Each structure stands twice: as structure tokens, then as C-alpha cells.
Length: 582
Image 1 (cartoon, rainbow, N blue to C red):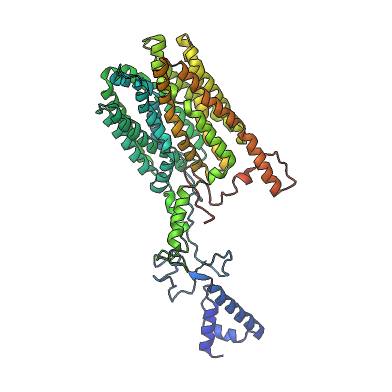
Image 2: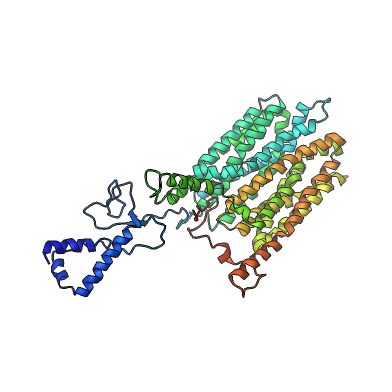
């Protein structure tokens, strides 16, 4: 064999193992037995056939960080003999090559270790201020409602309670209604930009409410602007905690939710003793300072991971050519990328889970009368007990007992396995409905305090146990969007409840019928939720029998079942996996 031909043949045979042929290789090759040469030729033909299904993976830069150079058209530099192949035909087989440069992992949570403190405690303080400011203002709306009634009440209008109640109901409803959209913004723009923008919009809403002179304008400034801004500021404050804590995430969430209850206790005192004598415009201006401070504190929401949208784009478009089309298709790549984004952001697969559907619609039914006491309680006290000067104490009792309930039932929920946690929510809704019906029966002020303490405990239980139930029903990969969709479903009944109660007051002249009927939806929702664990076990039993005929149909699903899709590393709150089946 001629030495030049021997070198050329050896170079071709070494593509993929990165071992250049030396000068002595030709002489060694000439001594190879014919049977081995025939095997090598067969391997070359197999490699040629394999190349029909594989194409070179283009790189943007000239080097990939491991010494391999690539040209713009996706071919390796002539001086290198290592070729990285990728499957463009959808094959699951891997090319039989030698050392191939490996790209960095595209999954955001893989191998990530949060700091578990340090700067994270400043983030906890900012999240506490955010939660406390938003829900402290919302839970204190009973005082604002009374001030709005004094300013906008018309003795000739028989629907004044109905019209004024829409101000606070819109603000609370928009917080939940915007939740699915906030999830998209948080994934795409990150926690810091979303939270800063939302807090500033909420600040503008409260500030502009101080200059509004008509009720219709306050629907927009307080109800829409403040409500939407609060939603965009609130949700990232919970997501960002997962960037700084994992082992102490429960502690961080407990500090945020429990400490924020102090705002619900302190703001009624501030509004009644400090802001109310100054008038409604000054009150809105004082409240706007809380959201202005939050827009500055939200700058601390520095994400330790990139937004989720980049992962979907990078991972989902692999194998798509620069021109926007997949190999062999002009528009396939563009359509594929956009469908990937659309399905990732609007993942409605959670509604295919029967138990989740029942749970979500049961909770949405229960909250129809949920916000009624927060809006109409102060006016009810003035009608029942006159001007006692102590009605603000009732709101403080709700805030304090709600904080205690979050700590208590958060710990109790950790001790209850699986979907049996729903029974806590069932009990909270049943007691909440009963206590709402008991409000008109209270003849003394102290009795009303006891009723509201129980309502606050039920409120804390309902809020604390919501996320763990979502994780049990849909798994960790879809829990974030499952919660977002459920909050969106809660928006309409929660918004409609207070105006309906106001309309009933205007029609009957008192709040008796309004509070009686407000207690019915929570009890109906509790009855619906009671059947969710039984349906869940029955469905899991059927799946277990199909997978393993010898398994126990009544057994709880194990971790292997719940976490079977967790293949992309550790999960963080607010992070959603891309569609693996596209």
C-alpha cells in the first residue's frame, strides 16, 4: 500500500475518535490482517449510512470552550478531527464516537445549590413587606369602605352599598384574576422586573385614587390599577424565595406569611387612628407609600437562575436550522418553536386530571362568600352596635388569628400524608361558612370577636394548605401553573361576592340575609372537596392495577409515581418544565 493512500485511509477511519494518524501508522496498518481490514471497511460503510441521519451541529462561536473550532456553516475546522453529531431524524440512537464535546446543561435547576441565607434574608424581608402591604390593605378595606360610603353615599340611591362594594371587590379579584398572566411574565422577564413593575403600578393606582372624585374613576384607579399591580408584585415575591432557600424554604415561607400578618393587625389601627381623621385622599396617599417602598425593595429580587423562557427556547429549538425551519421543512421550525412557547406558557394539561378539576372548581365555589366579611363587617358593626370606636379591633383579630392559623396548620399539614390534606381544607370551609352565618346572631361585641377569631384560623388553614394540595394532585412539574389557574378561577366568584352582599343589603335594609347566604358557598365547596381524596385513591388504584395487577388498589401512590417526570434536575418554585413530548 502506498504511504499516501495509507495515511488518507487512516485519517478517514479516525473521524470521531479524535486520534490523528502518525507517520508510523501507515506501516502498522499495512500489517493488519485482511479480516480486520474487511471489518473496518464495513464500519466505514456503516458510518456513511449513519451520516444520512445525522448532521453537524452548528455553533455560534468559533470554539465551544473545549478546544473544538467550528466554522459559520457548521463544519469543523480542518485542523480538528473531532466531529459532534446530532440526530435530525428523531432517532434515539447515539453515534458511536469517541470523546465528544458536551454542551453545558440547559436545565436551570440542575445542580443548583441555593445559598440558604445571607442576602436571602434581605429578600425574605422584601417579600414580607410585599405580602403584608398588599393583603394588609386588602383586609383593612372595611375601614376604607366606610369612608367611601360617607363620600359617595346618595340618599336617593338605593344601591349605594352595591356600587361602593365594587371598589374593594375589583381590587381583590384582580389579584387572583391576573395570576396566570403573572406566571407567564415571571417566567419570561424574571422576578425582579415583574415585581418592580407591579409594585410601581400599584403605587400609581393608590396615588391616583387620592385625586379621583367619582366612584367610577376609583373602579379603575383602585380596583384595576392597584389590583393588577398587586398581583404582579405579590407572585414573584413567593417565587424568588426558591432561588435562595431549599433546606430552609419552609422556614422562609413561614416567616413571610406569619410576619406579614402583623400588617393586617397594624394597618387597621393606622387607618382608624391616624389616617381617617385626615380624610380619604390623604389616606390613599399614605397607603401608596407602602407600595412605593415595595417597588424599591423588589430590586433585591436578584434571580440566581435565568428566566424560564430562555430554557424553553434553547432546548426546544435544538435541531432547527438558522433559517427558521427544521431540516426538510421550510416553516416547520418556526411553527414548532412558537407552539412550544404557547404550550409551555398555557399548559392546560392540568385540567385533564379529574381530581384537580374537582378541587379547583370546588374551591372556586367556596370563595363566593369568602371576601364578604372583610368588606361589609365594619358597616354591619355600626348598624348593630352603633359607633363603638372599637370596630377596628375586629380586623386586628382576623389578622392575628390568620397568622396563627398559617403557622399551626402549616405544621399539621406536614404531618398528614398525601391528598388527605384536603380534609383540612374541607373542615376550614365548613367552619368558615358556619361562622359567617353566626355573625348576624351575635348580640354582644365580644361574641363577634370570638366568631372572627375562628374565621381567621380558617383563613390561615385555607391559604397555607393550598400549595401542598396542588403538589399532591398534579406533581411538582405542573404545580405552579395549577395554582395559577386555580387562583384565576377564584377571581370571578371572589369579586362577585361583596357586590351581591351589598345588593342584598340595599334590598332588605340589613346584612342578615347577606351573611346567611355568604355562608352557603363555603359549605357547598367543602362538600365537593370531601370526595376528592376518595376519587384520587380510586383513580390511582385503577392505574396501579393496569401497571401491576398484583398491587394494592387502595395504596397511596409513592414518590416514584408523583415524581416520574422530574428528569431535569431539581425543581424551583415557579419553574415549569418544557413540553417533553413536542
